[in-house]
Length: 397
Image (cartoon, rainbow, N blue to C red; front, side, top):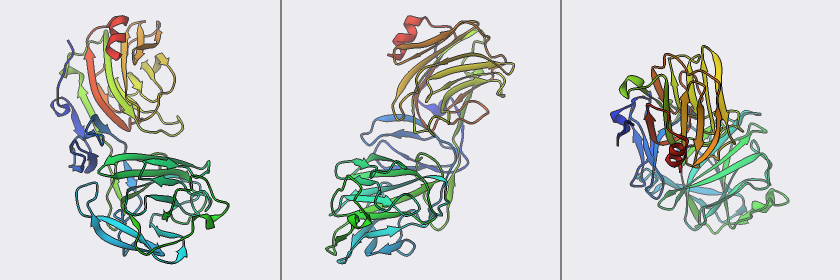
């Protein structure tokens, strides 16, 4: 019989050595206390599941886009102008002046040439609804990615150096991000546009226009991470700040683990990973070491195991799309291993031993090693027997 629960906290041992933010069911960005799990929802109130992330640092020391600490060029900033995604009146209004120029503000994070960064910010339309993220340290001045927060669309600006994303977080707010490898050390800017370009102009002058002195946009929650994808918002107010990693596990004695055979089921999704170089693990069974373990790589669609430090089986399908929820079932039994994803068989392995001495089921991590999921886990089930292939197909459909 599968062990089930409507509340993760009833079963798991969970730690995180810092607070952390998440989007709650009411559409408000909340803060979870130290060691408190985060059950996250999307902007429409749909449950995504347990959020599990690696440790990250926000290198932007003033995340609220505070007037006295962000540089301005032909703009004015009004603090506390509107309700922010976290329900507080802390979002800033960035407004253009009447000069003919580029209208922008500049952040404080330190950029190092050759390092990959992801910059993200929450934006909401007012009179203006299009802006770009750029800077000479990011990519060419004529290639700045654009974001249209009226229609929820992002454009990479014609540059191959940048990856862009936009996420609806509710109440007219969008979280906009750009990932790039820095080509210089100058800072990043948020630049207002009078219209959507959707193509790189011939030069930086293509982003210049005459302001009317009253139009602008709302911004909040700026974040600079030395990584290839954004993670949950980390607030700062004068210095950089670090969110600790989420660590979740269940002792196998809690659910009647069967050493000889069994079936794992997980419903989950992962964020972007570094061009496939990083493995995002959803679940893992191990003995406290990396020598005896069985684990499922969500981004690779892979079920793999080792015993005595030797790989015993490996079933690897196609890489799975990021930010897309899947259902996966994994079977283990001597000389009988199988993986099903979304109703289809990924493959089988008919030669290998089951990992011995298993003590722990890790959630969102490949056991004692890294490979954090960086995503959501909606459901986990364990069956102390080898389900039939027909049952595996039905379970994941």
